[in-house]
Length: 487
Ligand code: PLA
Image 1 (cartoon, rainbow, N blue to C red):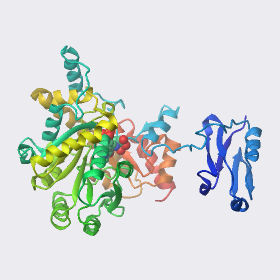
Image 2: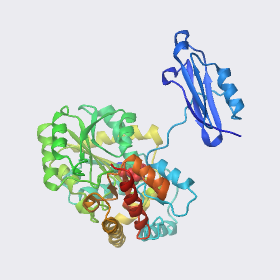
Image 3: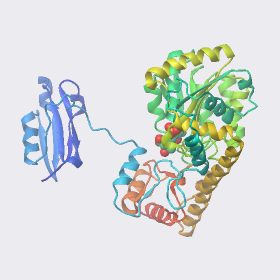
Image 4: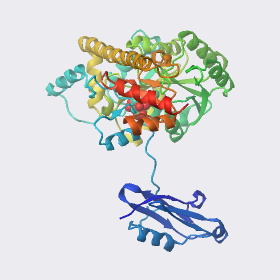
């Protein structure tokens, strides 16, 4: 049986006239639905169907029968009677889709450096010892049950999460100006925050995100009702921060807009402002433009190995007395990826405001998913509340951060050894889980095809997915890509 590899139809014929086709190459099937053609369009419609190298073109009008015939000839199945026949095949997610492609690759040498997920030296996912201990405690505690949590989750979890990032001596906490609600990891916290702001924020309902940023930010906020705009962040020439550009763009933002800031270990660039630069950013946000900072803290402890150091920037903004939104994730720092544990905090002016904000956050959450899940947040609560477990966690966390840093050195040395053209200092200078290599799409595709290295097309590498065993393979791949394809 032959297969159709490409079909392209003009996108302007979507909607009720031409409900577009979708092609499912692996299932060897072509789906399409044609309703009726506007007479005026008949003369300039072209449909191309590629069947194992043979191109069928139809210019000047398309007939359902024509494509049916092609489909029939090539042995594909065509669904014309489904109410969902117009549904198009969506592209895979730029990050999670890399794992899908990786899983399909039968080559045993394959390495997944796409998604930011920590792996051991043996290339295995890691469940922290301290997490296992907490789980055993939970299991042994017969007083525990599986009742619904309240809409905002486990109260202790919320209190401890706020303390973890803001510091236990935080004045805003003492003044009851902090409201924290347990959410579905970092993503869910951002989403709830976005929807709350869309409904209740008194300022400009636009969020400025860095360019580039974690791709999902650009989807989470508009779907939550807040439009995004970008501010300059990364300078490809220096592979460092475009501080001047960032300040200029924030100054040009409308007063009262929201600005998304990565708390530490910026994704995907691994470039963070210095403390001095943070101070300059804070002054523009607070004193000049009255912007609302919305921190995304997905890597506390992963950047430097210290929870306090990585919370430094957030604390500067909270301790100046201004208002802050803050999304926290325990996916990376406790390795609780699939448990979906996180928190959204609003640090506001006045305990009365905090109480009312919390009541409205409940109205956002209830119709979205009712209440959050118990297990992961119970683990976190135990670890944060128990002095011994907490100390043990900090040691394990530092161990993960240190291993990532050692991967940076190993990769840097391996490229030096190979005399790979270019300057690779940024591998050492960038911070956190990722290196933004500067490799382009063509080079990445080559590395995936020839070396079975899976990474995002923007050239981002998850250093946490590397090990001493796979560094030489990655270095060979980078070397070859750089030599064969110029950037
Ligand atoms: N914010 C940032 C900046 C992130 O990098 C990620 C995860 C999240 C939030 C959300 O994480 P969570 O919902 O799992 O808590 N970014 C990953 C995974 C690690 C992903 O894309 O979902 C990444 O590979 O970029």
